[in-house]
Image 1 (cartoon, one colour):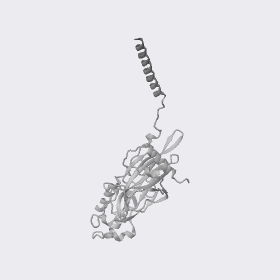
Image 2 (tube, helix red, strand yellow):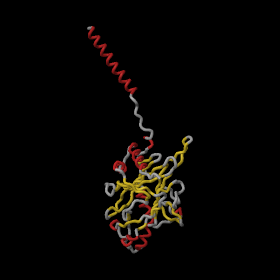
Image 3 (cartoon, rainbow, N blue to C red):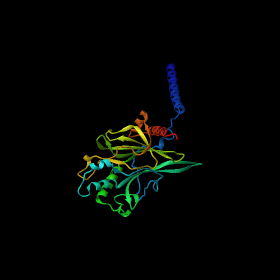
Image 4 (cartoon, one colour):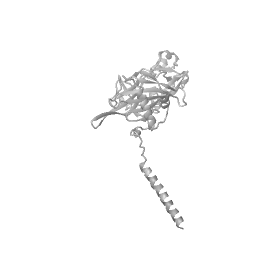
Length: 310
């Protein structure tokens, strides 16, 4: 009987020791905290801001925005003009002019913040908009605002603007942090012998100390993965005005003289000052559609390492 009691007593001591020891280990084990920057990255895909109607956009950043990332002035490539149909109402020349009537704008706003005795810069917002020349000034327009801004639209112009905004509304900011963002925008691109809707990806990098903005661009490709080019990226020129020349896909006219979103397409990335080959590991990250914060951080660091040193 004494042995049984002794055995039970030893067992209780042993179990208690294990429990206490386990609790002690839990207290002694270091808690692994997420890195300080983990909450900096918003990886929920959201639309960019729309540049307000009435905003005047010349060759410099417009009011309310610190940077003009790119302004595009599309036109039919001269060698492609003979491919245009010659509808009886406004003829080939009218169609050519209609294509170059609208411009597109892509802006960013980098703001200054005080942190104690130090000044830092962060990316506040990304903006997209469409517009036309109004009495000698390029101005962002919408179908609903055009009359009030002094630019009554013809039915064809309304349709052009409507389709343009329909495409632009598909753009998404897939990652945004204090000094880094990824923006995907749909683009009609010449792939082989036809135009296809692909996505350009823009990576915006803010220098937190100076507010300088560098923008990389590469081609993600179509929804099914075709027409992608993840092997290279280009660094855009500052405040570029892209007089982009469009190629005609005659099969994409709804009927003679009525284009759709793929009738006209580009075959080049926007104007750039540097082109680089993306390393294989970075290329894989560059092509993702969803990111965890640590992946976003790795991609940001990799793209910063590719920036010219001077």
